[in-house]
Amino acid sequence: MIKNTSKVYLGFSGVNILRSIFITLFIYSVNFKFLPYDVPSSYYMLLVFVLCGMVLFFLNYNFVVVNRNATLFAFIFLFISLISYLINVTSHDEYMVRTSVMYLMILMFTGSLVTVLFKSSYLLTLRIIGYAGLINSGLIIAMLVFKDFQNFYLSLISDKAFALIGGIDALEGLISLRMIGVTGFSAYSTGFVQVLCCMCYILSIYYKKQKLSLKLYDYIVIFSILLSAVISARSSLLGILVIVIVVLRLTNSLFVLRLVLYSLCILIPALAVVINFIPEGQRDFFSSWLSEFFVSGIKTGSLQTNISMFKYNIFDFNIIGFSRWYGDNDDYFMNSDVGWYRLTFAVGYVGAAVWCFLISSTLGLKNVFSTKLSVEVFISWMLALYVFLMMFKGAILFDSFQSVFILLIVGNVLNRGLSNAS
Image (tube, rainbow, N blue to C red; front, top):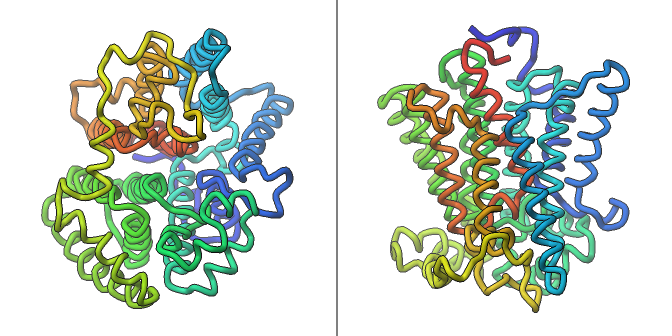
């Protein structure tokens, strides 16, 4: 069924740990003090993508492009971003142009990276992304539970990045509950990435064994990642629901029921233990924040704030956009954090449409728009729906542009399907 999977070791090993650290530094983009010029780690890791492409080209005169359709749309998206930037020359910022370039580089050089560093195995890459989520989950939980470790790790973050997340004064306040994880600050985008990492880990098991058969350490990895996702953001509950639905499609209702029961039996006590370690002054706030959605429903404070931003109509946007991502005071342009608004304000209706095709292509255009509901088509639809809904929360694939890499890897595996995945 699956080619050559026996030749690729997916478990823990020294090489896979190094690969996991590399992917962690890429998808979580952390500003360490020891990195030159205060540049986030994701940019340095992206240079490795490019170097892999150069190595392949000069040694084999070969250039591996994972998804040609998505790469084409990335070129078009960059072109539109540049046109919008030039048209709005008197009032613009470079954010969308810069992000468009990042999209294009990821789509152009991911194939080279996988070929050189991952033995051309997209299945191995899936598993490594899962391990990256595990690394971040360990840091999220450890930094929340152990204050001394949190202080030590945050001391490694660059002064500029540390100041942006609150600085030394914030460590004694409630914001310190968010000063966790690889980046030193975890919010809705962290929860989103954690959910994607968990999905990658589950799919790597499914495509390796041609069935979803979990061992004890698989449960530990999955539960750790999901626990960290919930700690990072309540919006992760939506992602967990997507995972449950996907697992139901991959297996059966009895397996899902058992998985949910196991999850509740482990996650609830684990959360109780974590909460018990939180300083008393912050414990009640964290418990209330975590349970607010279940108590208040749509009256939840953050949800109401998000809803209040839906105040624009179709005539407030234009064809090519305003090439603005930030407001005059370094806040949100037009005072809205809604992802769909920010995207359309920046590159207009044309740019937003091209971006939708870009993301759909990344997941596998033929899968997303297929009428045949195979496992691969179903997963593509669910991930597309997840991205679509999260864009109402925030500009998720811009706040975490590296997630395009994860979607590209998943999309490639789904396109190959059970008969060709390796």
